[in-house]
Amino acid sequence: MHGAGAKALPVELWLAIVIIVVCVVLAAFFAASETALTAASRARMHALEKNGDRRAILVNRLLKTRNRLIGATLLGGTMVNIGASAFATSILVDLFGDSGALYATGLMTVLLLVFAEVMPKTVAINYPDRLSLWVARSISFFVAIFGPVLIAVEAFVRALLRLFGVDTSRAHSILSGHEELKSAVDLLHREGGVARSDRDMFGGLLDLRDLEVSDVMVHRTKILALNADLPPHELIREVVSAPYSRLPLWRGEPDNIVGVLHAKDLLRALDASGGELTDFNASTIALEPWFVPDTTPVQDQLQAFLKRKSHFAMVVDEYGVVMGLVTLEDILEEIVGDIADEHDPVVQGVKVQADGSVIVDGSVPIRDLNRVMAWSLPDEEATTIAGLVIHEARAIPETGQVFTFHTFRFEVLRKVKNRIASLRIFPASHAGASAKSV
Image 1 (cartoon, rainbow, N blue to C red):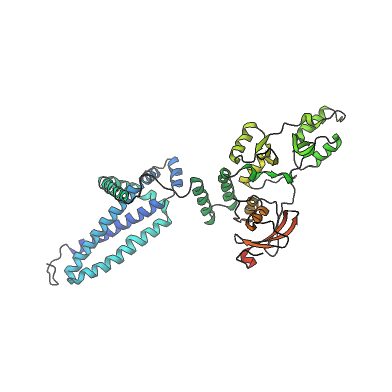
Image 2: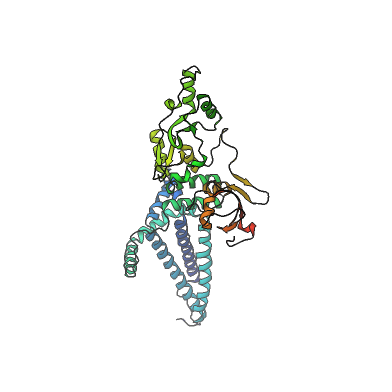
């Protein structure tokens, strides 16, 4: 029957070729479907489902039972691959004898690799969403047909994995939902689908949950506060010349904040008195100061601002010492970036030099510097760039000292007492250094 001189083939040659071609096409269909459905964007499918696309509903239904989906595509692909190989082997053995099995192995390896694996999966990985919508109905049919077999196989596999200590009853994600969202937006930015400003805004919104008020506050050394006991005309002159509409008032010593003076309240008081300053007392029109702990989560502080309808709070440490102040604008700037108006100071403490270096004031927050320069300096251990240098150096450096860490070169340009006032920062690739040096 299988000799070289056999007079008849097991099946007609043309019919066998048609069956092999159909099997290869089906194998390509199953391979492309598996790749497309597993690579499809769940966010896009969710959006299409909300818009009423029935195909997207099927896709989401399939993705909810991902194990069964993969089992159906693998089962279907395996069946047609074996069928195609069996028919090809039968034909070639009848034509060439025992050596036909070797020919069939080589022929089917090329056919299945090129036309049933590489080519369909290449198409699917480039058009996953479109292809998923196209194959959703057909794959749903196969999942339903193979359902009983897949349930039995799935139960067997789970039991076998359990013997090796693998728990498949719940998902184990390495990243949190916030981290996955942030990584997805960053990836879209690298691919050109999201602008840098949009990526930074979205990342700033997600980062709020990890920040405390101390990370976004204006430090006490930068607070513009007024002595409540100043003569009225001097106090008014200070308020008019200040770039802010709300100013803390202190009495006795700067840490003793007794109120918050709003420029509008001052104007109303002056208008009501007809410009008479004889009986003017700033303390009577100042708002009561609101003190919040420096460990307050930024998200909670944002909600507190909205609830109290107040945009200004003094920040204190565990001993009640004033550490700084925080405003609603400070929190919003963590999301949308720097909000500048015509009264804001022009100097921001970051100056890009012609040689590629950047001169930075030591008090510039790391997060602001990262946003402006598109850098990724760590901000977990320090809030300002000077704090980062001190943390990495494990000491207060002297003027002229140079350090290299986190792929950047830091040179201390100026120091005031124990505070780093100015730094020159070079990316390490420009500096030609790769290790910390002093």
